[in-house]
Structure formats: structure tokens, C-alpha cells
Length: 473
Ligand code: AMP
Ligand code: ZN
Image 1 (tube, rainbow, N blue to C red):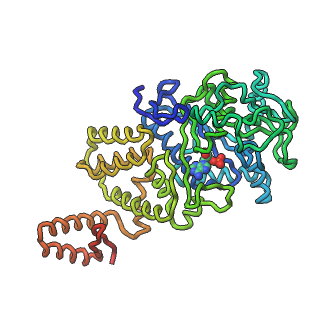
Image 2: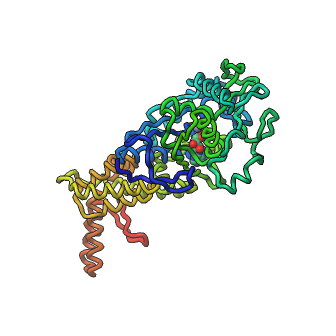
Image 3: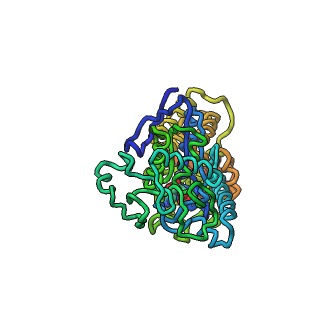
């Protein structure tokens, strides 16, 4: 299959042409949510951009199999195996069982995804479904001498690898080796960077979910789940693995260490990481207690798809700052866009040459390291271009397979909210253009006549510095 897509690969630290292991197929994995609380809109930025990535592959003709885990056990409050178990913390907070918490927040996560038009991955697997697979992988790692038992826990021995810090540059590696001060001292570890594969000596005697294992009753470490769940469904070779930038270290670093030790060869070729959404005070986090959710922005009157558009307008590798002022601006832009699309008439035949030309431009923007904002620019340019409405509508529908902003259907809702229908809008916009032309030709009598004609129809226009604005009288 001809290859037109390139993405930044965190592993090679450069933008690379995407070449999957099997021609025409993509094996894709996404680290799923830890379901102890609602997802904040920062988490959802990652899932929106990963959704766009998956849809870009499909748009380019690939057959994608996408797998995602649900973390319902083993994720401690620090990603480096220390602190309290996040699920247990959620259960205590809400006086429920861990499984009740997991069910409630898994459902809430997918409800948020639905509002944001995020497609559910082909396979979604909770960690608690795969305990036998985790135990098997740990047994193999012990047999191969990549793991050891100490103080009742099983650890991965990072000193067995020639290159543990795979995502770091040479100078970063020199700084990192042996000086991980983010890790609480654990006397059982042989090396500070070793990590837990299986806990039996938990600091938390009240750990609710425990399983029998060859090393005693306990529970798995967080990293092992993504290695096992991805291999269970995608096999020993994976094309692309995604997550937020905070997953690079230690989570993805540890996933690579144990997976490649287990399979004995390179495991995943491309690593795709989405930068964080920040609020004015800094990085968003669920543990801070007060955080932004889809329900919150909805309760303030915002359409969740406007948040999706806000994310698409900036590049996934740049930090993004959230503010309601920006969301207001995106709302205005979204409403205007869908109203314009709503005024297009499904008449005439689709111009196949034009269709192919713009479709290729749109795909090229996405294939250029997922440049969603230039993909949106292609949409705007296309709407302004000289071609019939039927071709424009066909292109809108095509682009929306990836953008997923309900572009072709949202005008009805926006019009109902604003009390203006598409036909009236198209008429007013045409009159404004006519008046602009009259003014340019210094035909002020005609310009005034147009203003009066609109007024008779109950439309007031106003000349402002940003252009002509109009509203119902
Ligand atoms: P969690 O539920 O904490 O395991 O996180 C789910 C996903 O959201 C992971 O891929 C994280 O890397 C990602 N993530 C966490 N915080 C943010 C943020 N502020 N902005 C974007 N993505 C985030
Ligand atoms: Zn993961």
C-alpha cells in the first residue's frame, strides 16, 4: 500500500514515515483510563487526538485493530510504584467497593467519549480480566532471569538491559542512571530503577482486590497490564502505542523493558504521545480534587464538540492551555461554520476531480504529523472555493469521518438554540455581500435600501471593526 503518513516517533525523536509490520494493517494500542474518578478534559485531550490518529489511518485506507486497557487495579498514586492504590482511594472516598467504582467510572468514561464523538476501540479489556496472563508473563521473566523475588514482591531487574532508558537522549541517560529521586527508597530493590511486577507485601493491608499467585496472594503492578493486554490481542509485534506525555516515563519505559525481555525482540515501532492540557494554574490532575470534566463544561452551556474542535485547532505535541474565553471563541467559530454548511444545498452532481483534490489535501495535512489545524484550514478553504454545493457537502461529510464534529448535521441544533434557520442565514449573508459591493461602488442609496429591506424582515445589521454583524430585531 502506498504510504503517505508520517508522525513524530518518541522512540527515534524524529518525524518518520509510518510503515506498519503488515501491509495495509495497523496494530494500535492505547493506554486506557484509571477508573477511580471521572476523566478530566486533559485526559480526554489525549483520547481525542488518539481517536483522530486512528481515524486518519482508516481514512488513508488502513485496516486498524485498536486495543485499550481499563486500569482497575495496580495503579498507585505515584507512577513509580509508591503511594496509595488509586482504585482503593476512590472506593474509600465514595464508600463503595473497588469493582463498583470501576464499573461506575468506566461507564462515565465511555459516556464522555460518546459526547466527544470518540470511537470505542475495537477491544477494551479491564486489567482484572487478565490476571492469569500477567502471572504467566512474570513467570517467564523469572525463568529468563529478568525478574527477581525480594521481600515477597517480584521486581523487574533493569540492570539486565543494555538500554533501559530507551526514550531518553544520551545526555539524559547519563543523568538518569542510578539517580531516580522520584522513587521512594525500597530496600528490596537491587537497583533504584527496578519496578514491581507483582505485589504481595503491600503497605495496604486493606487492598481489596487480591489474587493467588505462585508468589503468594497479591496483585499486579501497573505496567505489566499494558504489555499483556496488548500482546493478548495484537500478538508479539505492534505498530503504534499511544498515551499522554506523562506515560513516557516510567510507564512506557517499563512496558518496553518487560515486553522485549519477554518476547526477545523489538516489540513496538512507533510511540505517539499527546502533550498535556493545562489550566491557568498548571497541569490538570484528577488527584487535585477540583477538576474540569465534560459534564462541568456542558453544565455551563458548552457543546462538548466545541471542546473537541478546540483540541483539533492546536497541535498534539504542544502544551495547550484551557480557558473559557478561548472556548467562547471556538463556540462562535463552530456555530458559524456549521451554519454555513447548513446553508449548502444538496443539488447537482459531485465534481469528482475537485473532490479528489481536496480529499488529498486534507489527508496530506493529517499525514504531516497529524496537523489537525491545517486539516481544518483545508475545510475552510474548500468551503470558500469555487465548486458546487453538492461537492462541498460531500467533502464536508468525508472530512468529518476524521474530524467527527457533526459538521453536516449540527446546524439544526445550533439554529434551534439561536432561533435562526439556514435559509434565513444564507439570505442575510447574501444581502450583506450585496450591500458591501454597493458601498464599494459608492452606491449608498442601494446600500441603504438593502439595510431597510433587511429591517423589514426583522434583521438588524451593524457595521463593526470586525466586519458586519447581524441579529434578529
Ligand atoms: P489516567 O486515567 O490517569 O491513567 O490517564 C489517562 C490518559 O490521560 C493517559 O494517557 C495520560 O497520559 C493522559 N493524561 C493525563 N493528564 C493529562 C493532561 N493534563 N493532558 C492530556 N493528557 C493527560
Ligand atoms: Zn499503559
